[in-house]
Length: 73
Image (cartoon, rainbow, N blue to C red; front, side, top):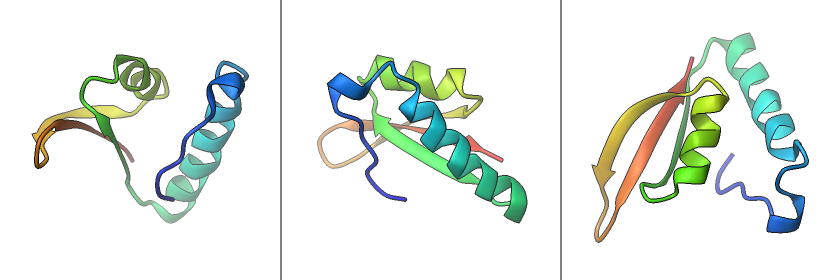
């Protein structure tokens, strides 16, 4: 999957959790690791990842901003 986003009017309706759970099911079946990233300043999304059992790996530089990396395995 690449660049998944929910429009604001669909946020808070559990759609993100459905997508996240679906993706995690593939990782569990295939014993794979899922990596997610976001702009380091997006505290709402970072909190969402943490609440959904993703491990925070740190902030890493891109060309002119930082991204936060998370993983699940």
